[in-house]
Each structure stands twice: as structure tokens, then as C-alpha cells.
Length: 315
Image (cartoon, rainbow, N blue to C red; front, side):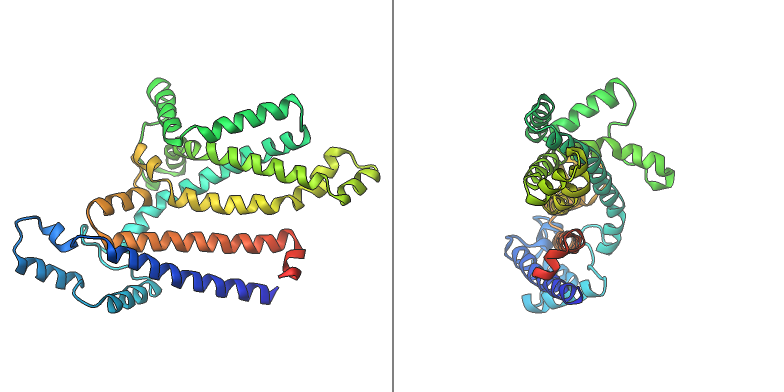
């Protein structure tokens, strides 16, 4: 197990180094000068050059990459060109919304998908299975931003159960914060729960055809007992993979939902930074999100080994 962990940690470190190089290179080739954009069309060349020097844009690409990467290792994400505050401060404010939103949406996804997938697998080929598959197909097909607007019209405009947008902050209490994130979390969870339920159903059906399941049934276990005691754990490998990818998507890909509900999260921060040409914010936040994706995949790999010891021995 120690060798397995060491290999995964080495892979994680190499992935982070490669990702940082790619992100920095992509930002470098974007046309336009951030200093000229910030000062406007009427700025003099001297003023633009002075601002470039102040922002540290006059060094070589290699030296700027080393400064940026070294700062990341020390927790220093640089200074925002637009807000004139440390990028780490902006990230700290916005992640207090994006991280709970992603966790809330993933929790709803699991609460919906697990029982739905179990029921569909246990009643394969029956009307319940057909209905679940049709509902999940509809859930995948509906765009989450359109579903989000329907939720706003129903629960905020008509029923007045929730606010149409905004975030009061966690200072107002946990209940108020979770209430503000409920509709966005539901909008994000619907398609993800549909995907996860279908994957879980397929995985469980494949597992139920294994020889050890037939042996368990021959020993007197009912289909439900064999499903819950034996098939469920062994069918979790592809489900864990999808869950890891979904959490990464919910954390990094909620930009549209955050704009629909006016949530001050990382998605809106990236959107605003791109429109304002605040490139240090873009590359730092994207690097943070890449780090989150890689760490989540690392945790999923560890969960593989916990769920199926055969994978540890094989690797």
C-alpha cells in the first residue's frame, strides 16, 4: 500500500508541474497587453511601460514562470491587476461559496443517484426501470441553466420560498447560507444525478452476472441480499470515477449557474478576470482548480484500493 501511495503522489506532482507549464504558456500566447488594456486607448507609451514594470511584465517568460510557480509553492498567488489586492484574498472570499456549493450539489447527486440506480438495477426490464431510464435521459438532456431559471420562476418568483439570487454570507448563519445555495445546488445536481444513476445501474447489472453472485444466490441469498451485500461494493469502481469527475466539474464548471444566481464564486471570478484582462487572477485560479481536480482524482485512486484490494496488488 505504501508503494502504491508513493507512485500516486509522484504522478500527482508530475501532473501539477505539467499543468502549471501549460497554463502559463496558454496565458502567454493570449494577444493583447494587460497594462495597455488597464490604462485605456489614450495612455502614453511611457505610462504603459511604467505599469508593465510595476506589474512585473517586463521580465522574460522563463523568469516570470519561475516567480509565479515559486509563489504558488509558498501560497502567494500574486497581486490582482484590477482589484489591487492579493489573488489569494480574492480566492479565499470566493471559495467560501464555490466549495460549499460543489459539496452541496454532490451530496444531492449521491442522495438521488444511489437509490435510483439501485432500484433500476434491482428491477431491470420492469416498468420501474423503464421509467427511471426515461427520467434520467430527460435529466441529462435538460440544460442546467435553463432548469435553474425554471427553479427561480417557480420557487422564487411564484412561491417566494427562496431568493432569486445573491448570497448573504456565512455571517448570517448556516441556514441562511444553505438556503441561498439550495436552488443552485439542485440545478447542478439534476444532470449529474442522472448520469451517476445510469452508470450505477449499468455497473450493478454487470456485477450481478458474475460467478460469485450466482454462487451467493445458490447458497440461498435473495436477489436483494446479493445486490446489497456483494454487488454494491464491487460495482462502486466506475461510480467512484464518475463522482470524482463530477466534483471537479461542480467546483470548476459552475460558472453559468453562478452567473444565473449572482453568486460570488470562483466561476464568476474567472469570468470577470477574463473580461478585465486580469491574467494573474485567471492563471492562478485555473491552477488552483487544476490542483483540486488532480487531488480529487488522487483521492479516487485511493478509494479504488479501499473498495477493491485486488487493484492494489495488481498495480
